[in-house]
Amino acid sequence: MTALRVITSEGAPATLEEATVQSFADSLRGRLLQRGDDGYDEARKLFNGMIDRRPALIAQCLGAADIAAAVRFAREHNLIVSIKGGGHSVTGNAVCHGGLMIDPSRMKSIRVDPAQQTVRAEPGVLGGELDRETQAFGLSTPVGSVSSTGISGLTLGGGQSWLASKHGLAIDNLLSADIVTADGTLRTASATRHEDLFWGVRGAGHNFGVVTSFEYRLRPVGPVLGGMMILPLSQAVEALRFYRDFTASQPDALQTWAGLLTLPDGNQVLAIVPCYVGSLAEGERLLAPLRRFGSPVADTVAPLPYVAMQQIFDPAFPPGRLNYWKSALAGRLTDELIEASVEHARKVPSPHTPILFIEMHGAYRRVGKTDTAYYHRDLQYDLIGVSMWTDPADTQRNIDWTQRLFAAWEPHLARAVYVNDLGDEGEDRARSAYGDNYPRLVVLKNKYDPTNLFRLNQNIKPMV
Image 1: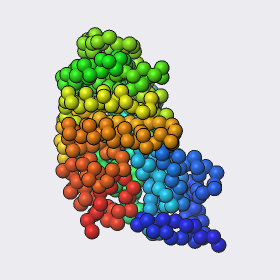
Image 2: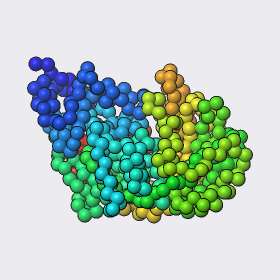
Image 3: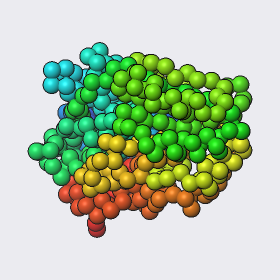
Image 4: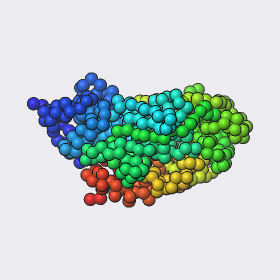
C-alpha cells in the first residue's frame, strides 16, 4: 500500500497509510481530493495568484458532519490544517501545503425568513449570492463590497460594507454561528449560548474553529444613490482634503470611499465613491456639495439597485492577479498622509493597483471596543495599498513600491489594522489587529483550541 506524505502542524514531514486515508474518505459525504485527482487544482486556487500551495488532502465538505470529521482527522493525525471559504484571503492562509484543506465552498444553502427578517447561510456562500436572495425580499445584511468575497472569512474578521455606517459591520448583525471547534464538537454560539465563543468569532477570524452556518439579522434596503465621481490626479490632493472634511460630518445613511487609481485608458485619477442608503431625494441633497467640487471627468452617481452597488468594484478585483497588500487604520487623514499617497500614486508600477480610503462611522463606531473581538471602533479610515499585477517578473518591483507607500504612511497612522486586510506580517502586526482584546482572546484560545490546531490565520497563540 502507498503511504501519503503529509506535513504536521509543527511543519515536520510524516506519512499516512493508504487505508487510513481511504477510511477518512469513506466517512465523508463530500469528496476527498489528492494531487492528480480531477478538481484538485481548481479546488486549491485562490483569488491571489501569488499563492501556489498543494495540500496533501482537500476535504470538499457538504455539511457539518463532514467538517467535524475533517477536524477530528486533522487533530488525530496532527496535520497542518487550513479552511477555505470564498478563497479571497490575500495571505493565502486558506490553502495549506502538505496538510488538510477543509473546503466548505460547496455548502451554499441560504434560507431567508422575511417575516422575522433573518437569514441563515452556509460558509460556502459568496456575498453576491446572499445579496441576490435577500434582496428578493427588499432586505440585506452587511456582507462586503465585492460580490465574489465569501461571507465566512469576511464576517469572522469583522465585515466592512456599504451598510456599515447605517447598520454596523457584518458581526454586528450576526445572531448566531454554528461552529466546529478543535475537539470536533459542533457548538452554537450566540448571545445566550457559548457567549464567550460568540464574542470571539466576531472579529478574530478562524482562530476558534470552522463555522458551518451563519445567522444574520436583515435590514430593509431599497435602491441606493451611488456611483463614482472621477477627478484628474492633478486635483487629487485638494480633492482628498475636501473628502476628509466631507466625511467628517456625514449622516449614518451616507458612506463615502475614495481611491487613487488608473483608468483603462491609462489616465490616473481620484475616484470618490458615495453610497446613500435611504430616501433618494435626501441623498441628492446631501451629495450636492460633493458633486459640485472640482472639475470631474465623469460623474456616474445615480439611483442603483443595491446589488449593483455591491458589484461596483468587481471589475477591479478579478481572480488570478498577483496581490500584495499593506493596510492600516487611521483616525484622521492628515495633509502629510494625503500628499504621500498622491505622490506614490504617480509612481505606481502597475495600472491595476489602487490606493483605497475606506471610511465608516455611525453605527460602526457606536459599538463598544470590547463588545466584540473587533476592537478598533474609534478609527474611521481603513487605508489599503492594493498592489495587483499580472507578470511574475514584476513581483519585487510591486512589493517594493507597496512597502515604500506604507513606510510613508506609518508615521501618520494608529498602531492598528483591520484583520481581513492584513498580510503575512508577523505576530506583532497580528496583535495590532486585536488591540486590547488580545489577552481575552488568548484565554478563549486556551479553552477552545489549546493546541493551536487552527493556526493558519492571523494567529492568536495559546499560552504554553
